[in-house]
Structure formats: C-alpha cells, structure tokens
Length: 188
Image (cartoon, rainbow, N blue to C red; front, side, top):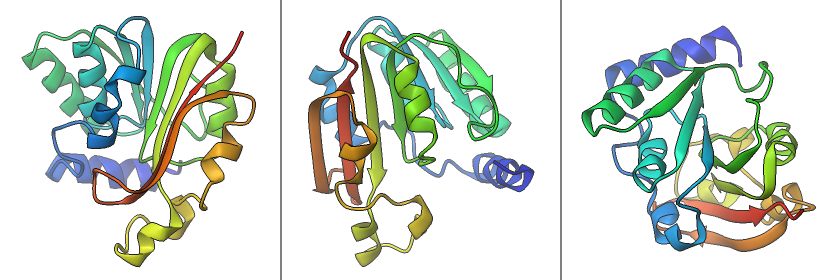
C-alpha cells in the first residue's frame, strides 16, 4: 500500500472511527462457527473492533494494519477491557505475511486478492479463513467502497479454492451492505 494510503487511514482513524465500535453483525451472528481458543490474525483490523471481540472469546489475537492511529485505537480499546493483543503495523500489500500457523485468519472489509493464498498457506491444519467483503451489487445502494475493492458475485468461493467451505452466504446482510461472507477450513 503506498504511503498516501497509510496517511489516508491515519487521518480517518485520527479524526473518527470509520467502522464504529462493535464487531460486524455478520461475524457475531456466526460466532458458533468460530473457535474460542488458538491464535487469530485480524488483517487490516484498524480500530480493533474484531480483534477485541475475538480476544474476549478466548483467542490469542494479533492485529495487523497499516495505520498507527488505528492500532492506537485498538490498543486503547484492549487496555480499557484488560485484553492482551499483539499489534503489527505493516503494509499487507508489501510486507511479508505474518508468520503462522494461525488457527483463524480474519479479513473484514479489506480486499487484496494476492493476500488470500498467503493467508491460506499460513493457516494451521484445521484453521479457518474468515472473509467478509462487499460485492459489486453493493454499488446499487452505496457509492463506497469503490468497484476495485468489491468482489464479483460468487468470486469468494473461487478465492478459497482448496479449502473446505464451512459456511458461505451472499446478499444484503446484517451490516447494510451487499456482502459475501465465508468461513472455510484448511484440511490436513
């Protein structure tokens, strides 16, 4: 991600919290599909809303994000509730993928397709890849995110090729966007 993206996200997290404080409704609705132990990596986790939720459930969580301001929000949130989280300020599009293996890799509202095979390769056997990302249909009601950050209809299934699909859905979901949601397991 170019330096201007780092500055853009630092500005957004410095001024306000663009995604709110609570974890995604889609994610929490599928809590029963997710582990409550093991180590989790929250990709582009920004303010820590998902990382803290995973840590509250008992996981050892690492959050990776380009924004120092977002990670500072995450740190304050975790400290205020006594949670232990690891923080990696990094460019997910340029830096090496965080060393696993991971029990769970989560990507919510962040799409860089080359990252998905790297995430899969760093999953432990039985580990879960969890992705929530808007599709192009989202543009029927919303102008953001831009098209280049949107999945084609049913594209997420092809990106998870080689994994066992635990759950997949697509539509106007809990968070008011036209999202694709995937939970997929790496088989031994």
